[in-house]
Amino acid sequence: MTDSRRALVLFSGGQDSTACLAWALDRYAHVETIGFAYAQRHLVELEARQFVLRQLRAQFPHWAPRLGLDHTLDLSLLGQISDTALTDERAIEMDAGGLPNTFVPGRNLLFFTFAATVAYRRGLSVLVGGMCETDFSGYPDCRDNALKSLQVALSLGLDTPMTVETPLMWLDKAQTWGFSAALGGEKLNALIVEHTHTCYLGDRTHRHAWGYGCGHCPACALRGRGFKAWRAHGDRPFRDTEPDAAGAAPVR
Ligand code: ZN
Image (tube, rainbow, N blue to C red):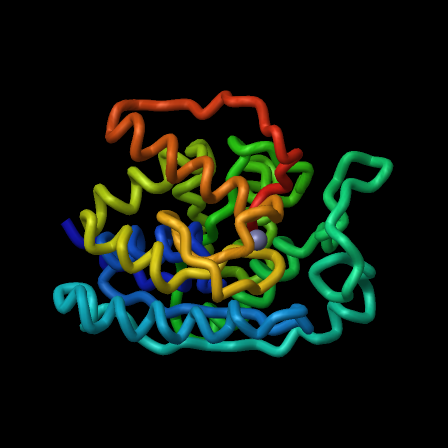
């Protein structure tokens, strides 16, 4: 049954947000997308967004009429308040607090708040994001309670119900592949493999079974390991508890 509410998906062009977009298209009558440009080292992510949107429209005609406008906000000011591997050329490493230095403090709170402002203007009342507690993450603003409290703050501050949905919150990477397969079958996972982008280094030249990437950075390691586990375990309930040999940072 279709939910008549209108949704806005935080869409980066990566695996997680593409799975969330499919979830929203399967569920809501009208879905728009929003992406944030903030001086990422690689424009690959922003290009991947457009490929994925085009392919979703072409390959899933029953979803296409629901897929509305795509919004891109320039948040380059984040470059002024962060000094991280996402926004300069420093190597990806863990800082003293155990957080990967790709951490932009409070980034998801900012993203949701900007998204809520756009949603308000566009008459959209559901915000969907791919945040997840299950894979190791040092990002406190990805946690369920942080986002539930943000939902309350946004709804009060905008004086209109604003629901924050995070369908991947309790899934690991292997289950996320299963989640997207359940929504769009092998066709959707093939699209995710081919067109979504995860690699921190922006590598689109090396093709693996799980997609393009350097194969070595923490983001590639996590994506590859989840894909392998999903292939090995199929649709059975599965928790990936294998020790993280690469010291993988989470992919967000
Ligand atoms: Zn990589």
